[in-house]
Image (tube, rainbow, N blue to C red; front, side):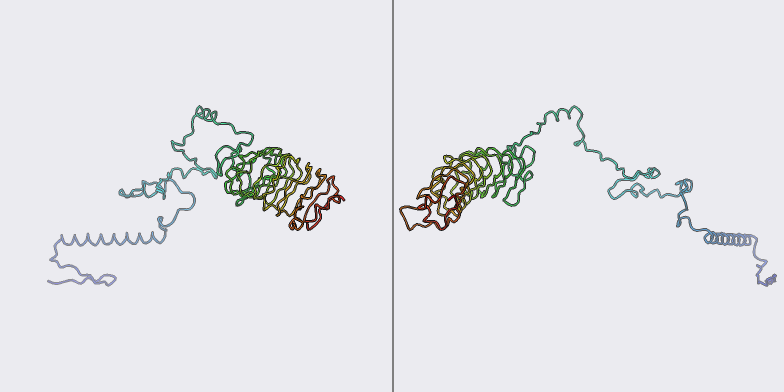
Length: 362
C-alpha cells in the first residue's frame, strides 16, 4: 500500500488516507472537525464579549432601575429556596417590598395596636366611670392612706408636699391650716409661718422620736391639753408669735420653751409646771400678759426672758431660798425683766443667790 504526499501552499504536511479507508469513516472525521471548529469560534466570541462588556451581575445599572430589566421572569429561580424566610428581619417580621416604591414620610410612626385587654372603652362606659370618681377636695384632708401614712387632700404624701431630710420635716410657709401627718421616724418638725389655729392631741400621736417642734408664726389660739403626751422625748418647743392664752402640759424632758409674743396669762400657766424639768435651760415668755413669775424654777435654767409683761412684784423665793442663805443659783445668768411695771431696786433680797443681777427698770 502506497501513500501519496500532497504539498499545499503552506507546505503543511497532510496525510491522505489510504485508498483503503471507506467512505463512512471519512464522513465521521469530517463531522468531528466541523464541530471542533464551531466550538472554537463560540469560545472566541465569548471571550470577546467578556472583555468588551462588564458582567451585569457584578455591576449595578446606573440611574433609576428599569422595571423591564428586573423582570423576575428572566431569571431562573431555585424552586427549593424559601424566599419568604430570606427577607425576614431579626424579629421574624416579613417586609413587604411592594411598599418600597412609596415615598416615606419623615416623623411618622405607625401607631401601636392595643391588645384586646387594653382596648378603649365605649363612650357609655367612660361616662359611667367618670361619674363614679369622687371629686378632689379643695382643702387638705390627711385621713387617706399614703406613702408615709395618710396622704394630703392634694393626693401627695407629706414628704412630697413638704421636704423630708433624714428625720427632719420642713413644712414652712406652705399655707397649711393644720399639722400634716408626719412620718413615724420624724425627730424635728418645722411648721413655721403657716395658718394653723388649733393643735389637736392626734397630731403627734405615735411619734415617739420627736425631739423638736417649731410652730413659730402661725395663728394658734388653742391646743389640746394632752397634745404632747405622745411625744415623751420632746426637748424643744417653739410657739412664738401665736395667740395662745393657755400653755399646754409639757413633758419633763424639755430643754427649751419659747412662747414669746403670745397672749399668755398667769392663770394659763400650770402651777409648778416647770418644777420637774431638770434639763430646762431656756425659758422665753416675753411680750405676754403675765402678772408674776411662774415658780418654782428648775436649777438647770440659764436664761429667763420676761420683758414686756405685767409683773409688779418679786418674792424672796422667786430665785433664791430664804431658808438657806448659802444657796446659790449658779446657772441662771440671763434674767430680763425690763418693760414691766417693776422697780428691781425694791427687791434686793430676791437676788442675793444669783451670779448676776436681772435687767429691769430701776
